[in-house]
Length: 166
Ligand SMILES: CC(C)(COP(=O)(O)OP(=O)(O)OC[C@H]1O[C@@H](n2cnc3c(N)ncnc32)[C@H](O)[C@@H]1OP(=O)(O)O)[C@@H](O)C(=O)NCCC(=O)NCCS
Image (tube, rainbow, N blue to C red; front, side):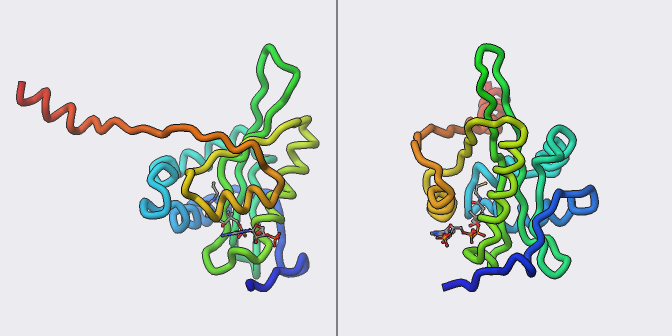
C-alpha cells in the first residue's frame, strides 16, 4: 500500500504563472496517447492558459519539496434558465509514482471548497470509460450517477486524399 503524504509535506496552493510549464509537462507525462487518446488530443498549453485566464481561483497545484507533483484545473458553468451553478473539474492529475498517496484527494478537497465558496451546487467530471484509476478515484470522492457518452472521431486526412483523387 502507498504511504500517505502528510499535510506538512504536501502543499496545496493556487497555481501561479511560474507553474504553467511544470503543470503542462506533468500533464504530458500523464495524458499519453497510450493512456487515453482523447485526453492526449485535448491536453495542450491552451487548456492551461485558458483556464488560468478565466478561472485562476480554480487552478491549483500540489507541491512536494518545492516541486509541482499534481494539479486540478476547473471552471464553473451558469445557465440562463437555471439557478444552479455547476463546477466542472476539467483536469486533475498527480505524478506517476506518487499516486495513491493522498495528493489527488487533497487537490480535489481544495477545488471543491473553492467551488462551494463560488456558489457551485453540483460538480461534474468526465473521463474515459476505461480510466479505471480515475473512475475509482472519483467514486471515492463521492461521485456517482455514472452516465456513458460516446466519443467519435472523423479523420479528415482520409477525406482530403479522396477529394484529391476525384
Ligand atoms: C486520478 C488521480 C488524479 C488520483 O490521484 P491520487 O493522487 O492517486 O489520489 P489519492 O491518492 O488521493 O487517492 C484518493 C482515493 O482514491 C483511490 N484511488 C486512487 N487511485 C486509485 C486506483 N488506481 N485504483 C483504485 N483506487 C484508487 C485511493 O485509494 C484513495 O482512496 P482512500 O481515500 O480510501 O485511501 C491519479 O490517478 C492520476 O493522476 N491519474 C491520471 C490522470 C487522470 O486520469 N485524471 C482524471 C481525468 S482528468
